[in-house]
Length: 495
Ligand code: NAD
Image (cartoon, rainbow, N blue to C red; front, side):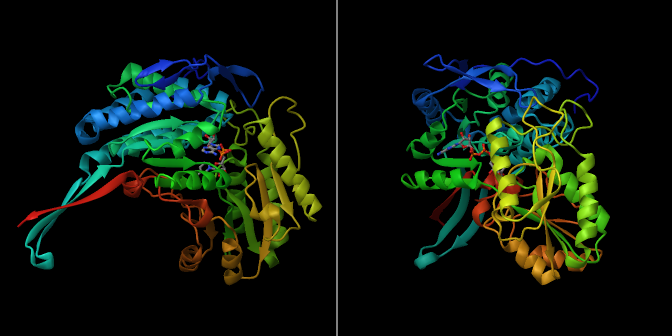
């Protein structure tokens, strides 16, 4: 754990991509800018890779998988992951400052999901790999009359293409790299163009401070999204692990079909926060308000539909608005800020389109509804609470990825469950009730991969995370997260 009082202002961005164990510029020598979303200042540049750079990276990963002992040497993998974890810990304050500057995340979040938690996850996966049962004996049997001794072996899939978004880059990168490497795969990471330095810094740490063999990890930055598609189509890649929007995830899945890749998808969400009529209403509403303001709502699991009992609707709206009003968008370097900027002007315009749509569909803003007046620089949007829309409206159905919460009345537990499940997504959710059994009953009926009950938090390295329906395929974290990156081989010999 790093020192929270340390100077967090200095860091050096890594401009180069990382291929075959070396940092290098793009073959074309082109670069693209990385921007501080809170100030709109250019922080610096990153290598603007093209198809030839991606080709090099895939070739390096393939070679490292096929021609080294990495995939068979668990001990080496465990020690390599521990080295990377130790390197990140040593540089945690530098990483913290860089993450706040490049992602626009509130500093406070770097002590949780934006940095410290993913580092902890890396240590956890190394421990898991050390104790994991890579081979399991199934004993003797005589299938078809042939007496045989059988066992099952778990093996790496091969080359993993990891494609990541910008909102929680360390968490998502390490939730892929950690288990993929622990399992014995080699990896090509393609980060989002908005946050290249959060990825390239790993190249620097791996090259300078670990014994991870050349080609085992490759990181290709680019302003061109099609490099992600290249990972999905290249026959040398065995698995694609994608986190991003559902629209892009569908393209990745379709592109991967041609070579029948294993596809792991962590996609969007429109999660419901369900308040039952016996719940601590103020506590629930304060939590819902806090959640949607966190990182300006740029989290796939953030609950963005607040479902409250019809009779308590006005009280719930007042309570929620009061808290959201206190969590107004602010400077992410301020330790007290919860709601920072959106990542880009493009993302802000997208959120503004949804705000206009809310009004066009008959909704109204209780608070917020547009840009933050006292922040002319940076991509800020005020926390916004919307009423007057029903669950079928586009604003209640589609992922906005901003600090925007829509409040919808429900008529009891069955109706609340139906509304919560009336969504193409199924990523997360929350239920509040004074009666634990009632809350658990509702949680069990929600068609989502995770549910928090009365404020309980499932987010942890040992807890599987992922989506139902159009929120994804597969699980990240926990034992399931490791097994996502493993093949199963069954063997038999004469008994
Ligand atoms: P995005 O889908 O636009 O991009 C994600 C990544 O895919 C980027 O690296 C991008 O360059 C790449 N990409 C773009 N087009 C591609 C293509 N055709 N083939 C392959 N790769 C391609 O998403 P974003 O805007 O970067 O991130 C926000 C989205 O991510 C939100 O929808 C959010 O819900 C989702 N997300 C999901 C999770 C989860 O675990 N379920 C976590 C964080 C974010």
